[in-house]
Image (cartoon, rainbow, N blue to C red; front, side):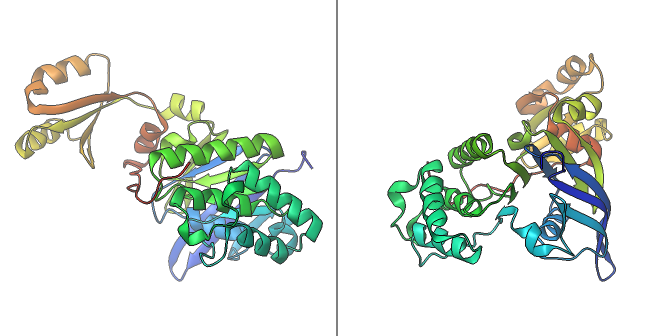
Length: 315
C-alpha cells in the first residue's frame, strides 16, 4: 500500500449557505509522513478534517483515504483513520481501560486482538499503571495520551489530530509529541495535524498554509522559509506614545502583536538604524529569525496567535 497516497484531495469545495468554507483544495499526503495544516480560526481546517473523517460530505471534488473514497466507501475509509479531536470525547465515568475496550468493540476488533492492543497502547503512552483510573480523575495531559492510544486500537494507518495541544501546558505538549513520534516510528503512521503552535510543526514533512478556504502555500518547512521567511524585531514599547511613533514611522513594516509590535527587517542596515532612532523607546526587544511563524505572517499579513495554554499537567 506504500505506493498509494495516504490521503488525496482533488478540487474539494464546501459551502455553508453563501459562505465559502473550502474552494479548490487539492493535495496529497504520502504514507509515513507528517502533514501540518496551519491557519487561523475559520480558515477551513476543521471542515477539511471533517470531510476526511466522513463527518461532512464535500459539495464538489473527491477525497480518498488510502484509495477509499470518503463518500462512496465511508466505512472502509474510516477503518484506516484514528482521530484525536480538539474537544475531548472520552467518557469520564469510565476507566482508562474501559474507554479503550469500548472503542475496540465499536470498531469490531476481535476480543483477543483487542486485549493485546489495549495492553500495547497503554504501554506505548505509559498509562499501564492508570488503566483502572476513572478518566475524570486524569489531568489534561494524561487524557490526551489516552485519546491517542484510543485512536490506534483498531487498524488505523493515519492519525488525525485537530489542535491536539490546546489546553495543555508546555511540558504536556512536549510529551504528547514524544509519544506521537514514538508511535510513528513503531507503526509507520501517517500524521495529519492542525495546530496554532507553529513551533510544533517545524519538523513536519509538509506544511500547508490555508486561509479563507484556500491553500496559500504548500511545501516543506525549509523551502517555505527560504521562499517566504523574513526576520523581525519583536519589541514592547515603553508606552503607547512610543508605539504610535514607531507605527507611524514604519507603517508598512509594523504588525501589532499580542505583547507589543513586530517590525519587519527589510535589509541589512535597518536593524542598526532602527535601534539608533528608537532604542530609548523600547522596554523589551528580541529578534525573530526565519521561521514558519514569519512565513505565515509574510503570506497572510497576520500572526498565527497561539491559544493560551491552560489545564492540567501530565507526563
